[in-house]
Image (cartoon, rainbow, N blue to C red):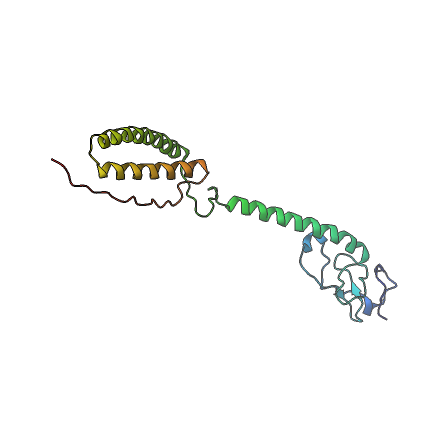
Amino acid sequence: MTIRQAGVPLDDSIPLDSRPSQGEPIRSLEEIGRRTVLARVAADKTRWCRCCDTTAASGPTSAYCPEHIRQRNPLLKRLRRQAEREAAEAASAAAPTAPVVPNGMVLVPREALRQIGVRAAAMATHIARASRHYHVLQQEGRDPVWLDNLMWSAKELDAAISSGILNGDVLPPHVARPQPARQQPRTA
């Protein structure tokens, strides 16, 4: 006679063929953990709980009595949360501590940016002085092409640096437009 009802305790009234085999030990839910286990099966196919001497549900995959099924679900949730916490802690411990730099940007120390800003301001002052000198030379009838090209290059560099810093970029690629060189013969 196979016992099909779940939750029947093992006692002296259970026939010998329906009793669980003595070779399979009873284990606690904590001992089993998240592993998948099978019910203890008697000779007449009666299914016994893995954690106690009570019959398990009659389904082919049920390994627990109704009481242990109620205890197992919260235990599985607790074990899953614990495993997720441990995995998150391990991932955060193994994560690189370097800051993430977006594509197309370069990580530059704050002091280097400050120095670039200071030098760009000094260059702007020198460009203003060179512009005055250039106009004086033009009024004298001379046209120093090299000074014009130098000033345009410095202005383009200043604009690239200033716009890169002010817009939050760190020196993005900048293509300076070439200025036409006006060459005049030197008058002696």
